[in-house]
Image (cartoon, rainbow, N blue to C red; front, side, top):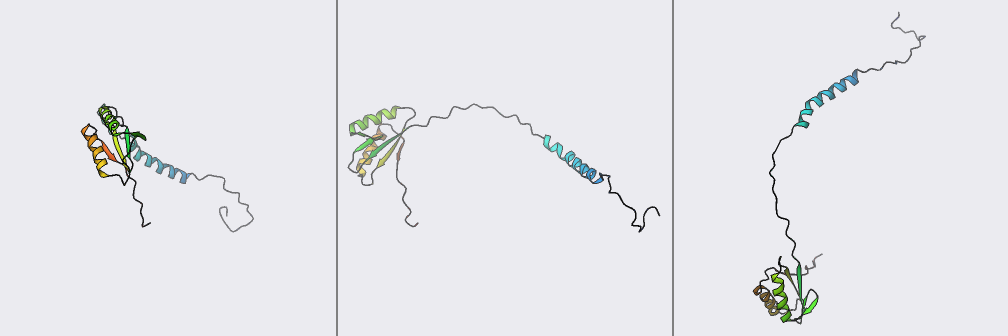
Length: 142
């Protein structure tokens, strides 16, 4: 018998042929996947976008720090200032464009009367942006 048998005397050489059938199957599957998905990559919606031009962003106005200690002394950006000088500086600041923001920093023991006078002076002279600066309260429960 030439094709098979139980004869152990024959030395079989290792198979030297490459089986390319599984590789061809994989390549054909990949080809089909690419054929199906390729139109999705080239599909685009054409939109004619409008063009617009806007004004440049406005400058951020400067901030003026007005500190008032417990005795009623006032400090304009850390420089001591009297009440008459304060009125002149507020009028000059109100004329600037963009108008600066006045940040009031008052000691907790400062009399409310002094704060009310400063706010009234600023508002009557045209300074519209007034803010209070405080220190956040500490959580005592933590």
